[in-house]
Length: 487
Image (tube, rainbow, N blue to C red; front, side):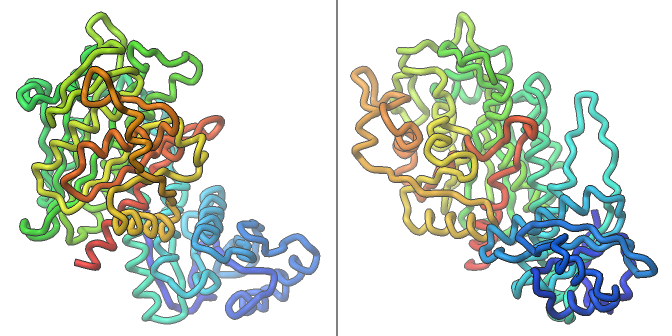
């Protein structure tokens, strides 16, 4: 997909579709375009066929113009970044549904921040065009090959060009994460993820990949992680991807992504209904892949390390049993009261391992608890952190990218619920499951700034639109980019 910015004469750029964001009151270039069409757009508004309401779509076919059709895109009421993103996403979906090979976005009516708007245009165009490929599915290639973002000055065009580059990297990263998440668990195994991580780093000067196998995990005394993979014939892997875009003296941001490639619940077996969706339990790890893809595209001057504990959670004669006690890499012991609370068991050892990189910050990303869906629904990721500034930065990054989170507390009253009579802690608590899960992880992150993102509600969609979403790649990349700007 090709993205360009232009400030050339709007009426002379030849494209298949012109996407015109506008409200019910035509202004500036919307008014000029209406005049070239002898008032057709204003007539549609007057007749009520187009109201200009936020995200409304109306396709107008033209004759004898430099564009074959105009996609009117309603903007009235789009007063926040989230609402404006929804408008742009609606326009991107509409463009993908046409037979257009080339589209032109008129940026004027979208507001003043053209770099941001252009980034959302590129991101939305790529994600709207995503089609699952694999396991016999051979989708038809998208007809849309290029999108041009138009502004009325060279200066604004340069800003838009930077936004398009960044946004296309984010969209590509999201689609990479979605593809991994959507693959069935008999293909996307821990070994498959390890192979994909090596492939991603091949020929890349700034990215290296290494794999910690189970034999080395035993040497490292990762008893908690190994307790989860014990019941599966698929060996676990700890995938380590290092992106170095800055000097080696710059402390890295470490992203720890949960990748349970299939989660039966283990001996604490899940109900059969909907269990097929447990292939998405590796979406935290997939999001780290997405970030690495985007970093390679943007070449941001930062150091980021991705640590992905990849396992399969299965019931078997040698699987971990409820009531078993395991010893983590940190030396802390854990009573496993529920083998379906396995994500935190692999994350705690990965978090301890991540400490060897002397990180500036560690962020873990995990489809960790169903409780977060009860608290926040499917729209918002749960955020918990031991550092107020880090939490605020992530919340702001979520707002700017439209990939939002909501902060929950980490109070000692919740931490008390994971007390065990037989170990240093239990792997489940009582009430507030999302918070007690984070309290568990916080016991392994006391030496550094840490945040936890529970994406169980946002990592995939169910129903007719079932599939991975690629979240929270936009939030993470916005956070990383803001850190690069500060440094």
